[in-house]
Image (cartoon, rainbow, N blue to C red; front, side, top):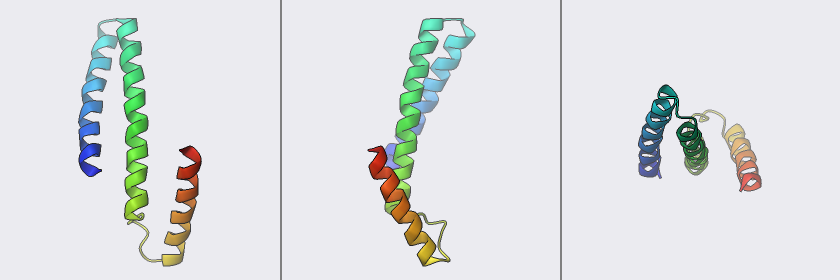
Length: 83
């Protein structure tokens, strides 16, 4: 999943360059198309990052196991509701 995330970030950077070029060149339709692709990639990037955090268990919450368990349960519910 981390490899997919890094590939997604590289593609997102490429699409952002295309979007910026379309805006610079005043190509409205190309910019709109590029923005749509950037939006889709951004959503996928966020969901993939959430899935990695969910699977790895929020490593930044280590001192209170009960809090960590509560966050994991909450995230699981939120993730299922979004899916």
